[in-house]
Image 1 (cartoon, rainbow, N blue to C red):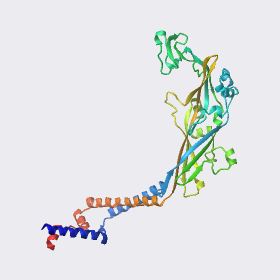
Image 2: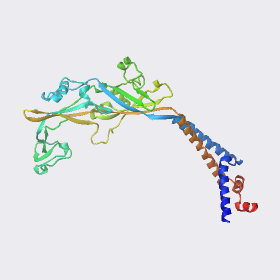
Image 3: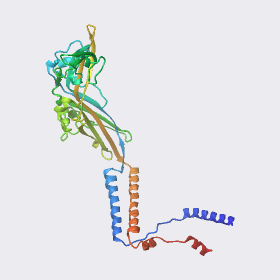
Image 4: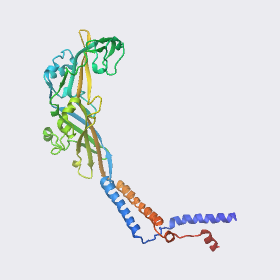
Length: 402
């Protein structure tokens, strides 16, 4: 009995393998008369087709393959600024590291070398709009500023060696009865923005020459933001969002206005400005259509911060009559950060086939939804089920053949 069943199973398996490669089956189709479900079916199909065509192929350009570009930005500043002479007459002539800056300041004129400090940054640049100079500082004892929280009424309020969070040095244990603040060991005299600060005028007229180089390795495409422009045009043009949108020379005051900001406020306190360069290249068209678009926005908040704006300090050191001396400069200005967004697209049979196949697969949702409505919402349900399915009793069929 066992041996006969084994032979029978072997025959079934062998026949199944043969049928797999010699027979083709199709799903049984049953047509139901139901206007409601039919309309729902067509609406769902139309929605899916519209999504595939409009969203996938037109908006997302699903028929193209894309690549993000590699880029570099080189920028320099052209123009002059002016400062008040009297604010810098106290600068000493023995600071060789600052001699160029002093000469420019005393001559009222600041060029790009003076205002772009540091001279080189990675995809960014800094333009000085206000300077606070503290000359000939030496190590000594002087009264702390009031804003630091070093107020005192006696020496007991000034613990020796203690430092204050916003202070300039270490307390020496004595209270200065003139200023009613503690004396500190620090670089003296302390920085005084009231008497030694000058605002550089004319910075809104500075010009930024921006060179942006972009490459798409897979497509073997190289572009630059001034590549198709005449040299004579580049030498004389100034960027205008309406009339000269491809000019690589930008007026500082104009781009700040495009960012919706007040230039005087930004120059007074300093700020961080995002300089956006967007490349969206469709390589199915001529390469000359691959050009950048520029946009600008302020990154730091205007209000609600403890220290608004942007500034930093630098110093120069030397010895004067054996005493270690330094100059301290506080630069307030506008830091411009360059952000490049680059993508190139080109037609691809592979991407088209994949997205088209995915869209056709979504049409299967229509069948699932309509079948659910047919068997759970329509009436009578038993009749519909019998029309769509044939019940076969396998055991009875086997007995009949025997």
